[in-house]
Image (cartoon, rainbow, N blue to C red; front, side, top):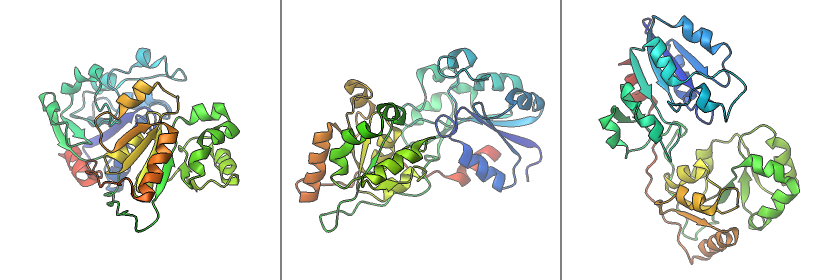
Length: 318
């Protein structure tokens, strides 16, 4: 057990911008002294940070570096916000490590000017070596992914496996259960099941859809289990699932549903050959064509790798 160092895991909003919990739990399991601060959940965060001053701290964060109280105020006003930069300035850690929470924009332009403060940039992707001009870059995989995605072996010899991972649940809560069902009824009539986001209040929504005969994948299901068990993933709006499924080698049909502008939605997955951003009608046509053998489900290259917990922990301990 390392008695000299305290490993401080820091971020905002578990499951969104704070993605480090699995690594925190891995380090705790291996008997290292770790403290976790999620600014949206941790009580008395400032007191905890003050208590760490003067100690040997290894600081690891997945937060946007520039998001302090002022910059966060348009999005979150329920409590005090301390930025990662303020923590670094106050604690002066012996080592600083950054791991991004977003695959589309791992580092925002606003973050770049501060990246040189970090000793190591843990990369979820193999194509971020250009960031070495700021910090040492080591690829460790995507922290939400625990295993390799199997190849899709559909060649018409069995039933095509298709699943819909819905995003923008707040929009559909406001729209209402009945109208949401009406929007997506053509998809459900194709026998395609749905996974709602793991979000407060989704259980009654699931029950309503189940009563309509829709197959329900549990909202708390690991998204990579859904990806692994299906040949085609249907998504909507600008969800990270589009990117996660595409980079795991799956065909993705990203349906234009009007939650964001068409331009924004098309730009989101630009350059990924396995993603088709399309109308619901074209999505259903594509699924039918695959079933008929008129269109192939290609085994696209798998770029996204499972998270290497052993390597990441070695970097923290080094």
